[in-house]
Image (cartoon, rainbow, N blue to C red; front, top):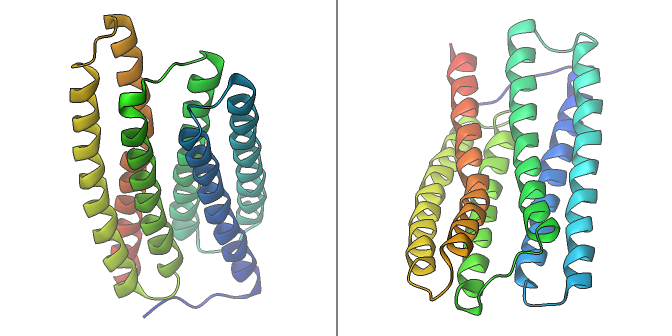
Length: 214
């Protein structure tokens, strides 16, 4: 069971879905950056700029969707819920950009020992986002499917937490300075926060579904 909307609402849903894909693209660009952390400074800057450009595009689509919603589409209570969801999704893209900034602007040096672990972490974070992305799409079409994807989001976020703890444990076993360890720990937290925020969005979607069923 889903919801039925008019032409104006359908246009906003299209923009909503475009924004979901733009956020996904931002995370994909960040994954490219993290996979290439062993490359030179110029390559890292190039990839960081791609993350920033992707985040800017997501922002552009978000603003367009919000302007359409403020024009009067949807009932006021649902409009507020949807606006909150769009803004929460956009924060995920912002977090991806903040990771890219941290890596590139601080010229962060990542030890070879944890490169593959960071790749695993960003990939799991993206899988978590993809699950909540599908939940967001399905909340307009199929409540049951949306609920399934919400559960998957929660499971993936839990798996991300495990990877995060393992990496931090490894970082503090390395023969590097305490300052470097703290800097790397912060980076790991920022990457994992993409998954954490995805779960927060899934909670918001769950509430919307509950309200729609009433």
